[in-house]
Image (cartoon, rainbow, N blue to C red; front, side):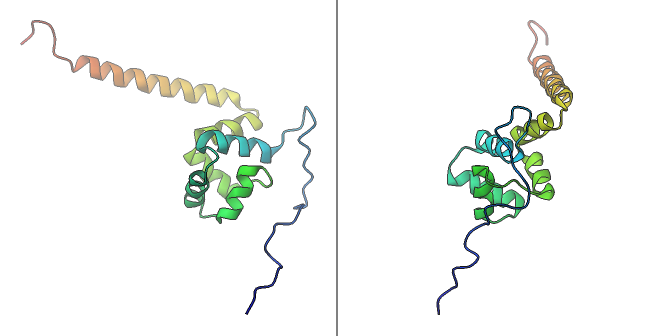
Length: 128
């Protein structure tokens, strides 16, 4: 028994026009693909990691990495949960860079608190 040739490939278009050449246009698929590659690299391990996070098929995830297609809203939410690169890319596309700054300030504040705790736990000079 042989399998039919239908269904092996994704269609060329998904009904949405994509224009990545315009200076004002934000190409969602390209931005998310770049963020995924920055976050996880271009190896098969990154694809497997994202497939594990999202439950999406590896072929689908490869299409996200290549920028051919973008993740659905549900999958994007999972990616944002796991990848700061994807979160930052999403916030830039949404025009919410101010939230990125707030997140970085909160992370810096937490690091300072942890450093102060570590310094205060050191034995003092001549105390005891």
